[in-house]
Image 1 (cartoon, helix red, strand yellow):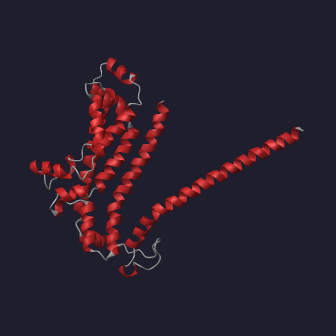
Image 2: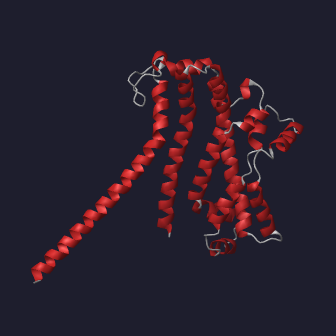
Image 3: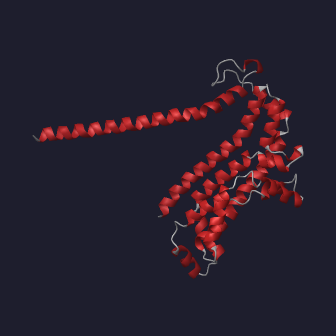
Length: 289
Protein backbone atom coordinates (compact mmCIF):
# COMPACT_ATOMS: atom_id res chain seq x y z
CA UNK A 1 0.00 0.00 0.00
CA UNK A 2 2.79 2.35 0.94
CA UNK A 3 4.73 1.51 -2.22
CA UNK A 4 1.66 2.33 -4.37
CA UNK A 5 1.31 5.74 -2.72
CA UNK A 6 5.00 6.44 -3.18
CA UNK A 7 4.80 5.40 -6.82
CA UNK A 8 1.71 7.55 -7.40
CA UNK A 9 3.36 10.54 -5.73
CA UNK A 10 6.45 10.07 -7.89
CA UNK A 11 4.35 9.88 -11.07
CA UNK A 12 2.40 13.00 -10.10
CA UNK A 13 5.59 14.90 -9.40
CA UNK A 14 7.19 13.65 -12.61
CA UNK A 15 4.08 14.62 -14.61
CA UNK A 16 4.08 18.08 -13.01
CA UNK A 17 7.69 18.59 -14.05
CA UNK A 18 6.90 17.52 -17.62
CA UNK A 19 3.92 19.90 -17.83
CA UNK A 20 5.99 22.73 -16.40
CA UNK A 21 8.82 22.07 -18.87
CA UNK A 22 6.38 21.96 -21.79
CA UNK A 23 4.77 25.20 -20.61
CA UNK A 24 8.14 26.96 -20.44
CA UNK A 25 9.11 25.53 -23.81
CA UNK A 26 5.92 26.80 -25.44
CA UNK A 27 6.37 30.28 -23.93
CA UNK A 28 9.96 30.48 -25.13
CA UNK A 29 8.90 29.27 -28.59
CA UNK A 30 6.27 32.01 -28.83
CA UNK A 31 8.74 34.66 -27.65
CA UNK A 32 11.35 33.41 -30.10
CA UNK A 33 8.86 33.53 -32.96
CA UNK A 34 7.74 37.07 -32.08
CA UNK A 35 11.31 38.23 -31.56
CA UNK A 36 12.38 36.88 -34.92
CA UNK A 37 9.91 39.19 -36.65
CA UNK A 38 11.55 42.13 -34.90
CA UNK A 39 15.05 41.00 -35.87
CA UNK A 40 14.34 40.18 -39.53
CA UNK A 41 14.34 43.84 -40.73
CA UNK A 42 17.71 44.44 -39.06
CA UNK A 43 19.14 41.28 -40.60
CA UNK A 44 17.91 42.38 -44.03
CA UNK A 45 19.46 45.82 -43.49
CA UNK A 46 22.86 44.38 -42.52
CA UNK A 47 22.80 41.82 -45.33
CA UNK A 48 21.96 44.45 -47.95
CA UNK A 49 24.72 46.72 -46.67
CA UNK A 50 27.26 43.94 -47.26
CA UNK A 51 26.12 42.94 -50.76
CA UNK A 52 27.63 44.05 -54.06
CA UNK A 53 25.55 46.65 -55.86
CA UNK A 54 24.50 44.23 -58.61
CA UNK A 55 23.20 41.60 -56.16
CA UNK A 56 20.81 43.61 -54.00
CA UNK A 57 17.71 41.74 -55.17
CA UNK A 58 19.37 38.32 -55.31
CA UNK A 59 19.20 35.74 -52.49
CA UNK A 60 20.22 35.26 -49.76
CA UNK A 61 18.08 37.97 -48.23
CA UNK A 62 18.89 37.59 -44.53
CA UNK A 63 22.33 36.01 -44.22
CA UNK A 64 25.16 37.69 -46.15
CA UNK A 65 27.03 35.52 -48.61
CA UNK A 66 29.48 38.29 -49.56
CA UNK A 67 31.13 40.86 -47.35
CA UNK A 68 31.61 44.11 -49.24
CA UNK A 69 33.05 46.16 -46.39
CA UNK A 70 33.96 48.97 -48.77
CA UNK A 71 30.27 49.89 -48.87
CA UNK A 72 30.65 51.36 -45.39
CA UNK A 73 33.77 53.29 -46.31
CA UNK A 74 32.15 54.63 -49.47
CA UNK A 75 28.99 55.64 -47.64
CA UNK A 76 31.03 57.34 -44.92
CA UNK A 77 33.08 59.29 -47.47
CA UNK A 78 30.16 60.34 -49.64
CA UNK A 79 28.57 62.35 -46.80
CA UNK A 80 30.17 64.09 -43.75
CA UNK A 81 28.97 61.47 -41.33
CA UNK A 82 31.76 62.34 -38.91
CA UNK A 83 30.29 65.79 -38.38
CA UNK A 84 26.78 64.37 -38.25
CA UNK A 85 27.82 61.94 -35.52
CA UNK A 86 29.48 64.70 -33.51
CA UNK A 87 26.40 66.90 -33.65
CA UNK A 88 24.07 64.06 -32.71
CA UNK A 89 26.36 62.93 -29.89
CA UNK A 90 26.60 66.41 -28.40
CA UNK A 91 22.85 66.92 -28.68
CA UNK A 92 21.84 63.49 -27.34
CA UNK A 93 24.28 63.46 -24.41
CA UNK A 94 23.42 67.02 -23.35
CA UNK A 95 19.66 66.40 -23.60
CA UNK A 96 19.93 63.14 -21.66
CA UNK A 97 22.02 64.68 -18.88
CA UNK A 98 19.79 67.74 -18.71
CA UNK A 99 16.59 65.73 -18.52
CA UNK A 100 17.98 63.48 -15.80
CA UNK A 101 19.01 66.43 -13.63
CA UNK A 102 16.07 68.76 -14.24
CA UNK A 103 13.42 66.04 -14.22
CA UNK A 104 14.74 64.55 -10.99
CA UNK A 105 14.79 68.00 -9.31
CA UNK A 106 11.25 68.82 -10.42
CA UNK A 107 10.05 65.34 -9.49
CA UNK A 108 11.57 65.74 -6.02
CA UNK A 109 9.74 69.03 -5.56
CA UNK A 110 6.38 67.58 -6.62
CA UNK A 111 6.75 64.31 -4.71
CA UNK A 112 8.46 65.34 -1.46
CA UNK A 113 7.78 69.05 -0.89
CA UNK A 114 4.55 70.73 0.13
CA UNK A 115 3.80 74.17 -1.28
CA UNK A 116 0.63 76.04 -2.30
CA UNK A 117 -0.75 75.03 -5.68
CA UNK A 118 1.46 71.95 -6.00
CA UNK A 119 -1.28 69.58 -7.15
CA UNK A 120 -2.77 72.10 -9.58
CA UNK A 121 0.63 72.82 -11.09
CA UNK A 122 1.33 69.11 -11.40
CA UNK A 123 -1.96 68.52 -13.24
CA UNK A 124 -1.13 71.40 -15.59
CA UNK A 125 2.21 69.76 -16.34
CA UNK A 126 0.50 66.44 -17.04
CA UNK A 127 -2.00 68.19 -19.29
CA UNK A 128 0.81 69.29 -21.60
CA UNK A 129 1.38 65.62 -22.46
CA UNK A 130 -1.87 65.71 -24.43
CA UNK A 131 -0.68 68.60 -26.59
CA UNK A 132 0.81 67.34 -29.89
CA UNK A 133 4.39 68.39 -30.56
CA UNK A 134 3.32 69.92 -33.87
CA UNK A 135 1.21 72.49 -32.02
CA UNK A 136 4.20 73.83 -30.12
CA UNK A 137 6.58 73.65 -33.07
CA UNK A 138 5.96 77.16 -34.43
CA UNK A 139 5.98 78.93 -31.02
CA UNK A 140 9.17 77.12 -30.07
CA UNK A 141 10.79 78.07 -33.37
CA UNK A 142 9.79 81.73 -32.95
CA UNK A 143 11.25 81.77 -29.44
CA UNK A 144 14.51 80.19 -30.59
CA UNK A 145 14.68 82.58 -33.53
CA UNK A 146 14.10 85.57 -31.23
CA UNK A 147 16.98 84.42 -29.01
CA UNK A 148 19.27 84.14 -32.04
CA UNK A 149 19.90 80.43 -31.57
CA UNK A 150 19.01 79.26 -35.07
CA UNK A 151 21.70 76.99 -36.48
CA UNK A 152 23.36 76.58 -33.06
CA UNK A 153 23.67 73.88 -30.42
CA UNK A 154 21.52 75.89 -28.03
CA UNK A 155 18.51 75.43 -30.31
CA UNK A 156 19.09 71.69 -30.55
CA UNK A 157 19.57 71.19 -26.81
CA UNK A 158 17.77 73.77 -24.67
CA UNK A 159 14.33 73.26 -26.22
CA UNK A 160 14.42 69.55 -25.32
CA UNK A 161 15.76 69.75 -21.75
CA UNK A 162 12.32 69.79 -20.13
CA UNK A 163 10.54 66.44 -19.98
CA UNK A 164 7.10 66.18 -18.42
CA UNK A 165 7.21 62.42 -18.89
CA UNK A 166 10.49 62.28 -16.96
CA UNK A 167 9.04 64.39 -14.14
CA UNK A 168 6.03 62.11 -13.89
CA UNK A 169 8.12 58.93 -14.05
CA UNK A 170 10.60 59.97 -11.37
CA UNK A 171 7.91 61.60 -9.23
CA UNK A 172 5.91 58.39 -9.08
CA UNK A 173 9.09 56.50 -8.23
CA UNK A 174 9.97 58.91 -5.41
CA UNK A 175 6.54 58.35 -3.88
CA UNK A 176 7.46 54.71 -3.24
CA UNK A 177 10.14 55.75 -0.73
CA UNK A 178 9.08 56.35 2.89
CA UNK A 179 9.20 59.95 4.08
CA UNK A 180 11.21 58.79 7.09
CA UNK A 181 14.29 58.80 4.86
CA UNK A 182 13.94 62.55 4.28
CA UNK A 183 13.12 63.26 7.90
CA UNK A 184 16.11 61.31 9.19
CA UNK A 185 18.47 63.12 6.80
CA UNK A 186 17.00 66.53 7.69
CA UNK A 187 17.39 65.79 11.40
CA UNK A 188 21.06 65.05 10.77
CA UNK A 189 21.49 68.54 9.30
CA UNK A 190 21.17 67.75 5.60
CA UNK A 191 19.60 70.29 3.26
CA UNK A 192 16.86 69.50 0.77
CA UNK A 193 19.40 69.34 -2.06
CA UNK A 194 21.56 67.00 0.01
CA UNK A 195 18.57 64.73 0.61
CA UNK A 196 17.88 64.68 -3.12
CA UNK A 197 21.52 64.08 -4.06
CA UNK A 198 22.67 61.72 -1.32
CA UNK A 199 19.48 59.81 -0.44
CA UNK A 200 16.96 59.67 -3.28
CA UNK A 201 19.16 59.65 -6.37
CA UNK A 202 21.20 56.57 -5.34
CA UNK A 203 17.93 54.71 -4.72
CA UNK A 204 16.45 55.82 -8.05
CA UNK A 205 18.95 54.22 -10.42
CA UNK A 206 16.34 51.97 -12.12
CA UNK A 207 14.05 54.91 -12.93
CA UNK A 208 17.00 57.09 -13.97
CA UNK A 209 18.28 54.34 -16.26
CA UNK A 210 14.85 53.99 -17.89
CA UNK A 211 14.52 57.74 -18.37
CA UNK A 212 18.06 57.90 -19.74
CA UNK A 213 17.21 55.26 -22.35
CA UNK A 214 14.10 57.12 -23.49
CA UNK A 215 15.82 60.52 -23.53
CA UNK A 216 18.84 59.36 -25.51
CA UNK A 217 16.88 57.38 -28.08
CA UNK A 218 14.43 60.24 -28.61
CA UNK A 219 17.23 62.79 -29.01
CA UNK A 220 19.32 60.59 -31.30
CA UNK A 221 16.38 59.71 -33.55
CA UNK A 222 14.81 63.18 -33.58
CA UNK A 223 14.33 64.45 -37.13
CA UNK A 224 11.74 67.23 -37.12
CA UNK A 225 13.23 69.69 -34.63
CA UNK A 226 16.82 69.60 -36.00
CA UNK A 227 15.37 70.01 -39.49
CA UNK A 228 13.59 73.20 -38.39
CA UNK A 229 16.37 74.90 -36.41
CA UNK A 230 19.45 74.03 -38.50
CA UNK A 231 20.43 75.29 -41.93
CA UNK A 232 24.13 74.63 -42.50
CA UNK A 233 25.49 71.20 -43.31
CA UNK A 234 27.90 71.46 -40.38
CA UNK A 235 25.00 71.56 -37.91
CA UNK A 236 23.01 68.65 -39.34
CA UNK A 237 22.47 65.55 -37.23
CA UNK A 238 22.76 61.89 -38.19
CA UNK A 239 19.07 61.51 -38.98
CA UNK A 240 19.06 64.59 -41.22
CA UNK A 241 22.22 63.44 -42.94
CA UNK A 242 20.70 60.03 -43.48
CA UNK A 243 17.55 61.58 -44.96
CA UNK A 244 19.62 63.64 -47.40
CA UNK A 245 21.76 60.60 -48.10
CA UNK A 246 18.63 58.63 -48.89
CA UNK A 247 17.52 61.26 -51.36
CA UNK A 248 20.91 61.39 -52.99
CA UNK A 249 21.31 57.64 -53.39
CA UNK A 250 17.71 56.60 -53.84
CA UNK A 251 18.51 53.50 -55.87
CA UNK A 252 21.91 52.60 -54.38
CA UNK A 253 20.52 50.43 -51.64
CA UNK A 254 23.87 49.10 -50.50
CA UNK A 255 25.16 52.56 -49.60
CA UNK A 256 21.84 53.55 -48.10
CA UNK A 257 21.76 50.47 -45.87
CA UNK A 258 25.41 50.96 -44.92
CA UNK A 259 24.62 54.50 -43.80
CA UNK A 260 21.57 53.26 -41.91
CA UNK A 261 23.63 50.62 -40.09
CA UNK A 262 26.19 53.19 -38.97
CA UNK A 263 23.41 55.50 -37.80
CA UNK A 264 21.63 52.72 -35.89
CA UNK A 265 24.59 51.20 -34.04
CA UNK A 266 24.98 53.94 -31.37
CA UNK A 267 21.32 53.62 -30.38
CA UNK A 268 21.61 49.85 -30.06
CA UNK A 269 24.84 50.05 -28.04
CA UNK A 270 23.47 52.68 -25.65
CA UNK A 271 20.25 50.74 -25.20
CA UNK A 272 22.08 47.50 -24.38
CA UNK A 273 24.43 49.19 -21.92
CA UNK A 274 21.63 51.05 -20.17
CA UNK A 275 19.47 47.95 -20.10
CA UNK A 276 22.19 45.99 -18.31
CA UNK A 277 22.60 48.81 -15.81
CA UNK A 278 18.84 48.85 -15.35
CA UNK A 279 18.77 45.15 -14.42
CA UNK A 280 21.75 45.54 -12.08
CA UNK A 281 20.08 48.48 -10.35
CA UNK A 282 16.91 46.49 -9.75
CA UNK A 283 18.94 43.67 -8.19
CA UNK A 284 20.87 46.05 -5.94
CA UNK A 285 17.67 47.81 -4.89
CA UNK A 286 16.17 44.51 -3.84
CA UNK A 287 19.26 43.66 -1.79
CA UNK A 288 19.06 46.96 0.07
CA UNK A 289 15.57 46.05 1.33
